[in-house]
Image (cartoon, rainbow, N blue to C red; front, side, top):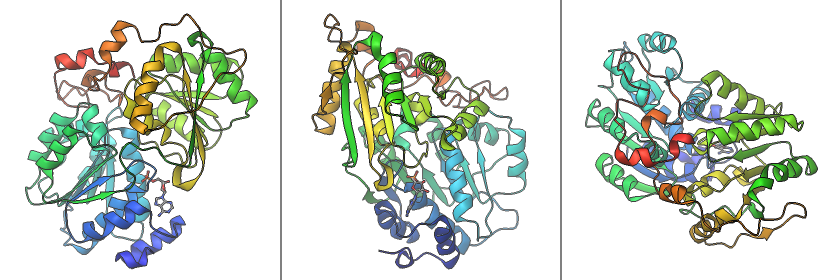
Length: 434
Ligand code: AMP
């Protein structure tokens, strides 16, 4: 199938060809036609499948063909869980809309709101936003959602994980009831289905990759290793293998910093990316990684979510995630767009149970290797300490500690995630450290 046959306008086809895309990805093939018909869409797609163009292209087409009011009210709203993803989606909106007369902007927390307000006051057709800052600006009267025709919830599963449900519900109330709704999510838990049922009307369901299966082009491997030897092992693998672009996942922000420091002192160029880093530091780290100035990006799950780093050859789980689905998201960062990639996990005795859960989820036995000099500790307990066990399965983050790391707003006396009070459940969660 070609982009021509999807019913997209000349202006969009021109922008697509300027991006160098020759044919639509499966999710684009499936999602674009029903969106152009004005239907609600429930899409199962991970980052890396081309999902952003899947909703952005038809959204731009619909808006450019509709009636444009002089004061340019917001007609399309794209909600994303993190500022990085918001920035990326916005870049896509600008790129694909380059030959159209539509205005767009991005708003997220953690940065001064003044430039965002200045843009909004000019009148914007499309706004890409994280929920907290959007609600802040709305309550200040800087943005109205009363004319929104199309709503996109991108990475809806992660938005729920990050405790945005109440913010999403508040945002829904600010928009007209009659509108087109598009919900994109990598996984479909009961909570996501419930959210979708409440928002979407008779949605067309589209799917890019089957739920929770790992992509064939990714080769997966486990190194069994003593916990105390993990840092040496990862440094060995990176230097011996001469790896140039590696995304490393740690469970905590502190762990990311510590590992990053050790790598730097071993002569590896590395940067950490997590919620305690300023927006400037995060943008700089990502830009450095993309331009190959930095070889290793050490990230926590939430910070890495949605990062668009094409053709990433190596993903390393320095620690296995305690939530099995996160493993699928993590390794989805390699082997993208048909390229091959390698996903490596360093697994200590304590993490064996996590590994079993992951293998169950992906329905695969992951090959195990032990490297000489980096053997596992025979005396390691084969489960996590009790405290961490309790944290398993608790995905919700405390909004106060959310890794999207947005600044507190004086106006609302809350952080960028909205004015939610942490629930009892949230306090148990270890997401706050991720
Ligand atoms: P996404 O899943 O939206 O984050 O997109 C992943 C990557 O695929 C981005 O770098 C896009 O620029 C790229 N991409 C999107 N659509 C296509 C396409 N049809 N052909 C080639 N690359 C694409």
